[in-house]
Amino acid sequence: MTPILGILASAKVAKPTVTGGTLTSDSTYYYRTFTSSGTLTVSNANLAVTYLVVGGGGGGYNYGAGGAGGYIATTGTLSPASYSISVGAMSATSTYQSSGGTGNPSSFNSQTASGGNPGTSYPSSNGSGSSGSPTSHSAGTTAVSGGYIGGGGGGGSYANGSNGTITGVDGYGAPGGAGTTWINGTTYAAGGDGGGTHNGRSGNNSSGLLGNGGNAGPGAFPDSPQYQGQQGIVIVAYLKTAV
Image 1 (cartoon, rainbow, N blue to C red):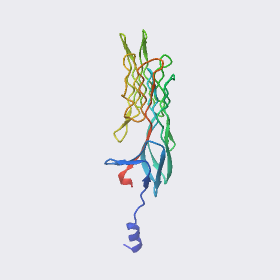
Image 2: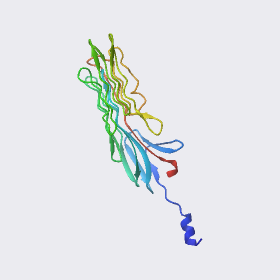
Image 3: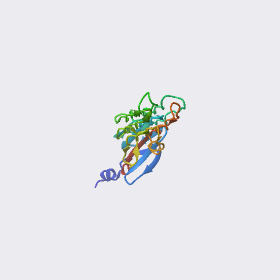
Image 4: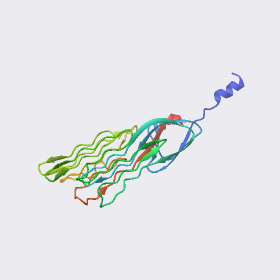
């Protein structure tokens, strides 16, 4: 081997350097997670990524559940640059309104996941579905009979919300639509649970999973407090062997 060829053969190919967000990993991927707005920076070389963008969930109110935030999971290649990331905050909350707050959108790399639609109090509307793109599922319908109410569940990123039901003098709120499980094994963007005359379904879908719609209130019409939808999230994943 000539000296020049030997130098070329031993030269190292530049690998990308990545900063920003909270770094975690599994056996295959590094994950850069953003639960608030920030910047992802790629240096030295292009980086192939898989990423998740979830909008903030809509707030629940009275019998109506909030819809999940929009859910976008896709792939791409990032050239060396700094990339702005916007993470949707929790939906607004207020005690004396006719609906929950709309979720706030999240965005990264020209992809925007809309905030979830709010739930509203009977009789103005059923619980709302997810407004996210490209995945959107509708809310369940609200059942009403003899003054008893079962609120529909909010739409999730994977499935529609279920319909509320009435059994005798009991109104039962319905579960929200299921969320979607990403490559890290975590499920995101489920719809909130509807409220009922006799059961206010608290603390199910709206706790623990980011981008979820808020649960409906316990049905103390007309001044039931709102329940906030969860904040959004952005996660950028790349192979451990790539850096």
